[in-house]
Image 1 (tube, rainbow, N blue to C red):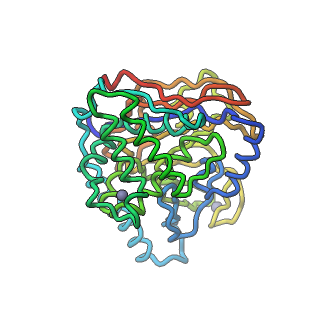
Image 2 (cartoon, protein in one colour; image 1 turned 90 degrees about the vertical axis):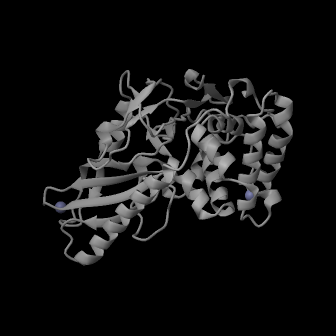
Image 3 (cartoon, protein in one colour; image 1 turned 90 degrees about the horizontal axis):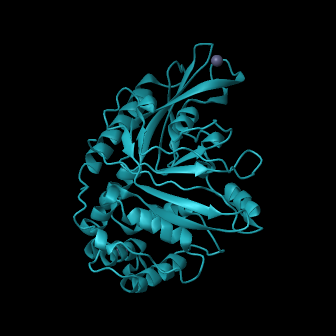
Length: 367
Ligand SMILES: [Zn+2]
Ligand SMILES: [Zn+2]
């Protein structure tokens, strides 16, 4: 497989850790921006709204008579320019694994008893060569622009990476840095209310690093995780609505069930499903087929399986996850990236509705 070298961290999602889990999720849903609520609940943001973790901006309606044609062309050109810059940026990072010897792989201490979500996430992240090389080569202390470098998540993540991949490895070596990281994350505003979810934690990490690093350095890692897409909805009246957006994490709703469904079948459904849509031409609200296509595929594709159905109940059936995932049936014709992803990291939740445990599943691809 040619570059980029794709990764697919994924987790089995939403097994309740306690009685207040449903309430917590409802609260999260209310408080979080739309991008975290899953593709099924997407809304279009107003033009110009900056939402780099899942933003979608209406940039063009093909037969829109109210929008100045020149303005539309400028917006499309800006969009194309952004994709080009992202592609160039991502090419600067190395996929070399030589600094990640198998002898160094080890666990991390779950000293509060409820840190499994963070440990599993960090294990998955620290086994991504592109991310590790970025941390070791670019996130240098002299590049830190945090107000207080002692309380900087990016700096402590780099320290953890250095410790983790030292030979010979041992949990004892990693432990002090991991404890220090725990303190930094807490002081940076992450509230501990028992268990949390790895995907929420990951977005928190990204948001912190965005403020702690120069944009030229943060942009490198963002470019690895970010996919850019175009979505098209056609109406029988002849109006075509075109929306562009980007995402660093793809949420797949597993409801309704596809019998013996494979991950690629769920992806295909989500990106091509019918959605309720009010046409801007005829103003009729109707369910219409949506077609979402990727202009730029992330080098590291992060997919979250949302195991919550419409009524809030947990989905327990399994999904077949292939070792290799082909994205070509949801790719735009202009997308010349490698569209085959190799599964390299899985974060899974095990347990019941009353409690559980997150684990990182090591895949032999790294050996
Ligand atoms: Zn720093
Ligand atoms: Zn219409």
